[in-house]
Amino acid sequence: VTVPEFNEDQYDALGEICNLAMGEAGAALATLLDVFVRLSVPSVRVLSADEILDFLCELDEADQEVAVVRQSFYGGVSGEVIALHSRGRSEDVADLFGYDDNSDDEREREVLLDVSNMLIGAVVNGILKQLNIEIGFSSPSLLNERVKLKDLNLNRNPSWHFVLLCEVNFQLEERQFAVRQLIFLPDESFEIIQLAVDEFLEDLE
Amino acid sequence: MAKKLLLIDDSRTARKLVKRNLPPEWEVEITEAGGGAEAMDLLAEQEFDVIFLDLTMPEVDGYSVLTWLKDNGKKTPVIVVSGDFQPKSGARVMNLGAFDFVKKPTQQDKMREVLRLAGVL
Image (cartoon, rainbow over all chains, first blue to last red; front, side):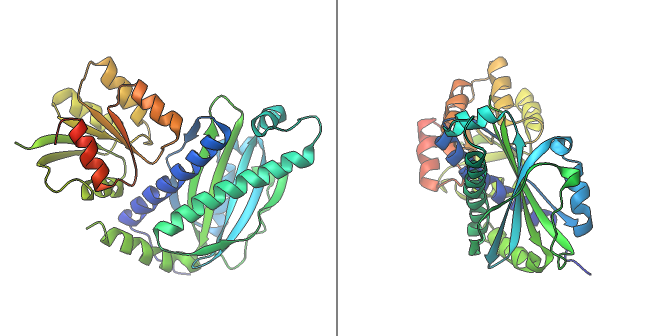
């Protein structure tokens, strides 16, 4: 399978586009929780489908248990997002989101889904709106509540040969709560993304 | 006489976006730095009239540049231009001595207003 390469300008533009979308999402989270959110420098790269699991196993939290939420999007382009929630003390999460830690695993699951839904919606919409691409979302699902990344079974779509991976991280200061958001755009979307990025860049000239 | 601007952002696209929205009447000579370390080298050697500074950069971020400027007694007005516009970011950069904070993507009218307040337009 031949995959069109992204050039340096396209990677750079996608990085800045992700940065702006992450900023919007981070501000929404910071306002919601009245906290300071540390934002990462976004990373954008192409991986072969076979490299995805190796990539996950090399992340900082590879040896920790994480909660994994998955959400798909479709429309002008399709793809999916995996949100990795580092598992801090559950009472910290309970305190942040204002529920009783002792009572309620179900409530914690709801919080993970709600936070993922908000952040994924803000970031993915933020990215694709800048590229004039309209999408819709499926409901998020909790893939695993506690799993080490090497044991994660993503049930990858077999039609994916390569993915464009956009990665952004949110870490709450002084709280044990962090989310790594991995946005996968499969090769069938590459041409649309490249054309849209080129148009975005042409507008700057 | 043209003002000397140091534009610090790790993204070429971001630097283009900022330059596109500068007031066209502003006479300016722009020096670009692709990161905090490069910016600090330039600032150690040259004087600028105004600095535009991104916050989220690899290795040496905008907060570190502001701290360095403060520690080295540099008084050049710094306008933070960032996509990270959460309220506590704004408060932090102002505490570190930034002159103002402008949200990305920049708007020409806002840039004009801030440059006038900084006394460079």
